[in-house]
Image (tube, rainbow, N blue to C red):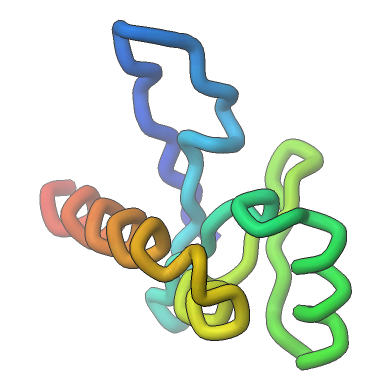
Length: 92
């Protein structure tokens, strides 16, 4: 897993886990914080579905495409975060 940590914006403090995305080095799949939809509930649903879960600094991350499908209220943010991760990787 490749982890991308974005810089904190000047206008306020945002916890590191909210500014971090994971990208699977095998599949290119983007992982986003499970806490976007309630970490415990997301973790239980992902386990039930057999969805891959990643952990970074004590926080759980799940595939953005899975989260946006299972928790539709996160779709717009998942799409934005996925695009941002792809843009970051393309610019490396």
